[in-house]
Structure formats: C-alpha cells, structure tokens
Amino acid sequence: MLFATISQNRLIMETALKSNIAENLRKHRVLRGYTQEYIAEYLGKKDYTAYSRYEQGRSNLKMEDAIKLADLYQVDVQELISVSPKVNQSFENQKKSNGLISILVDLDGSSSTLENNIIRLKKINELIAKQDL
Image 1 (cartoon, rainbow, N blue to C red):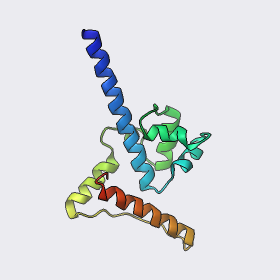
Image 2 (cartoon, helix red, strand yellow):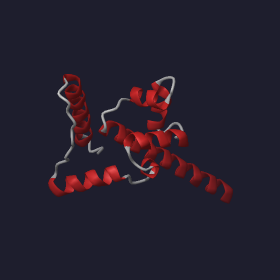
Image 3 (cartoon, rainbow, N blue to C red):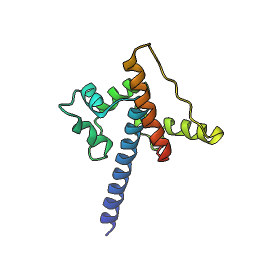
Image 4 (cartoon, rainbow, N blue to C red):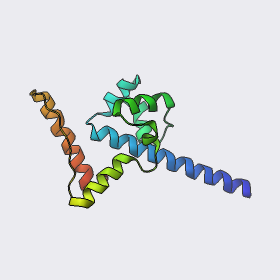
C-alpha cells in the first residue's frame, strides 16, 4: 500500500512539473511573438508537433532543447522549468501596481516587423483577457 502511494505521489509531481514547464514554454514563446512552427524549426524538429507536445505537457522537455530555448529567450534554464517563473511574477507585479502591462516593441521601419508585433501584442492581450498572463 505504501509503495502505491509513493508511486501515485511521484506521478502527480511529474504531471505537475510537466504542466508548469508547458505553461512556461508557452508564455515565453507567446511573449516574444514566436510560433510553434518557428520554435520547432529552431530546435531542429521535423515538424511542430514535437514541440507542441512540450507545450501540452505530453512530452518531457529534453535538456538539449531546454538549453537552446533558454538561449533563445535569454533566460536561465531554471526559469523554463521553474514552478513560478520570473516572467509570470514580473507581469503579476506590474498588473497589481497599475492594472497595466508594459511591453517593449522593436520597430525597424518595415511593414512586416510592424505586422508581426501587432500579432504578438494581440496574442498577449488575449492572454491578459483570459487572465492567463
């Protein structure tokens, strides 16, 4: 009986960890305006579904991929696998202080950059509306 409880607890912890990693990956990707397809290509995956399984919590994040993503997002690997990522905390603090979130947008004068940033901002706004951010 004790063995079953330990196994069940381990499974619950593994599921919770996968869920936290999935949420962190999605938030970092969306905040930067990347698609799952782009991230999959960046990681050298054959198609986006391999990466999509990370964001769904259906696959374990490989350390090699975690290192590449941390480099892309310019964060520590720990932030990607943390239960309470800094990205979430910083946005929560901003929302509490004034009800708004500040986002920096880089523009280079091209219409494609402008359009990509508009898409990115719309996605962030949707996350805020759903209280997912």
